[in-house]
Amino acid sequence: MVALRSRREQLGEPTLLTAARFKAQHRSSLADAMIAAFAVRERAVLVHEDPEFEPLARRVKQEILPHK
Image (tube, rainbow, N blue to C red):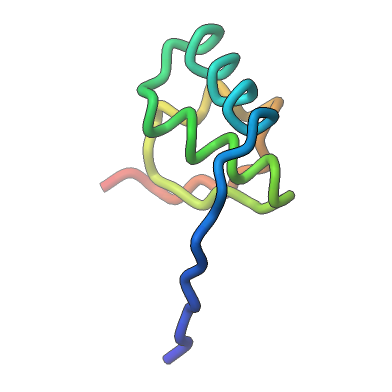
């Protein structure tokens, strides 16, 4: 089993502005917009099975899991 470390993240203005753009342009929830903005900031791959992230595919690297 792999243990993941949590770390406290600061919400900087660039991340907040990215989240605001995602929310406004793609009609996503604030929570989804923040998750996507953090993924962009960290250059991470967003692994999910949530169809609401799919419109962000050009802006956020994603690995889409099969829907249940």
